[in-house]
Length: 292
Image: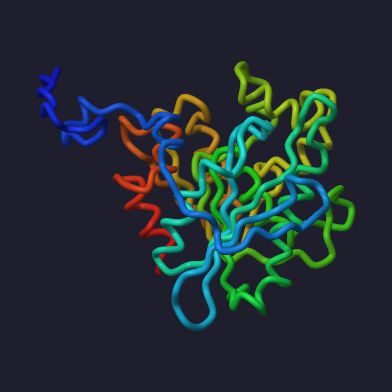
């Protein structure tokens, strides 16, 4: 067994070069990051949670656009605040970012179908925003984390939905690429687990898969394959919240069906939240994937 080296007295947590001394990023590290206010906050519906934050790069011409979707187990306790620093960092690299909020289940109601309808409405609003804000909607990419990764993969599949699909739309905005960060790709399997996040899956769906099998099939990325859209999936091998099997099974199924998906495995000590930090190895990978 390799001997751990002593961390330098003044080295901040996570900054040592010895992997054996580092730990996965914590939720506290994510929320400790700071960001400036967005350029625009724009509503896409009447509910207070139906809005998005638009950040624009200081560059001329049409802006390639990244739709950023936060996670948080689809629960109302988690909003888009924790991904604002990531949006700001991406915008600084030359892309417009459209960070969307959406309705989540609360004590009075579940999230079906509003959570999923909101994600679709917020994406499609880019057609309206494109002109006044110089957005290149021919090159829209979607990045989502955890539950937001489920929404990102699902949005990319919408153009393939048939009229019988319960969330069919006649003219969904196409997605040119998805970067999914520790996505929940198999909703049925995930909701069958224990803990607050699987409970969030059951809450957003209004029950388990035995009670609502059609709802789960309508939104689970594993049953709505985003064929024809390049997919990059980033997942920590030791993710304790969303097992990497969720991504491995999805990527394998996409490629077997003739699509194109790549899985980037983050080695230990990376965990579920490392992809949300705006420094470190995971951030370097996201820049290579998203900023061309």
